[in-house]
Image (cartoon, rainbow over all chains, first blue to last red; front, side, top):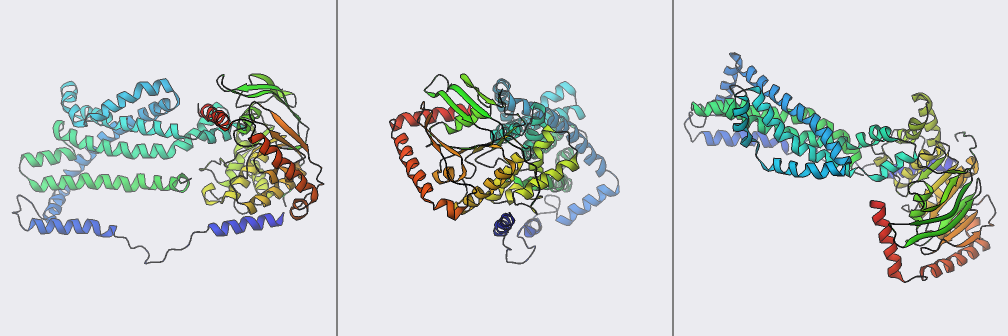
Length: 269
Length: 280
């Protein structure tokens, strides 16, 4: 059987990826943010500072907010609202997504509802929630929940439906029973879809947060933008926008990319 | 070479089996097949003759309308620990490494601890020639290597009956011949009953003690060929022997008779209903 091992080694050698030639580590993506900043600076030279401030003036504004301790409470408020609304929608979406994936009746029931809710922009719920819950945390959390949960349910459901019967069959002939099938096959097989759902849900949640804060809040990054607009402070508006983009980018980099990288290796099958 | 204990085989009895999809054209009407313990049986048939249906019945995924499929005298279930199944596509779990895939069955059915399982899985990977590839994810393995893992995954549970659904059909000719030899070596060592489904005549002859040719539905067994080729078999000698060619000639004639038995469109209809049931 020694020849067997050699065959296998030879087969593996053929699969070895070839090294790419080129400068290591260079990517055009390094240019995207700097070019945007340069364009901003160039355009800003054509306007007075109170209409379109320069990049460094916005940075200065940011420094002032940090220095007088006002910035952190706003970021914290937005963060807590996302935590509440997004967290609740994760739990509900996983339960409903799996149920809809496994049960045809529940799927038929819930899909039209998902479609209906997804057709309504989250901001449209804000006035109603304001009437019901008043200005504050609950209103924003509910708006976030409504907008994040629906696409997440659909994504997880699609994932469960796509889990191949062949994997389930393989597990059954290897002796897996009902709960074992769930824990050892359905759950790991659905992790890429759950990750995708988290990503979609987070971007929805973040948009809803900012939109809702602009209408019904007394703090938060969205409030910073809308308040800046009302008092005619374009520096504050741009600072808010920068932070909204920055925080979202940071989340993407810190959580979703690394998780997704883990599945990339086995998803291409 | 890793040491493994001889497992031995169980008797598989298919008796008076009737099966049809949703009251459509019956696939089997009174099928009888008896497989001796330790026998290597090849089942040969053109596509649409019900090979896949037969395997689904043999593994207990489908219930016969009438009649029975019994392993060692008991009705068969997919979860039967004495049943091993090697699929046409390797069906490995892509999120588990090679050794974890092999361990899977032990994890489901035994109370062995992690170390014992790992050790046993390693032994069986070594047995199929994959020493050193324990930690590879399936996507990093070639088609032949994936099928080896799949074989090890089935063998590690020491099944008394091994069902093989065209396991090497997707491999190139050279890899396939190598795999055939390896399979014979393993079978010689472990001694389980093997039911090998294929549409490759050479493979069917080379491996088996007996070849069954399935007819068009609801034909059942069209012909049975007792394979007298001496063992141990080896590629150059066996494949070029007079007897091998004679069997091959007979089987080619049989297959072409079977294929021309029914009008083509009817056979295709049967296949369509097969697919629709498998998906439903």
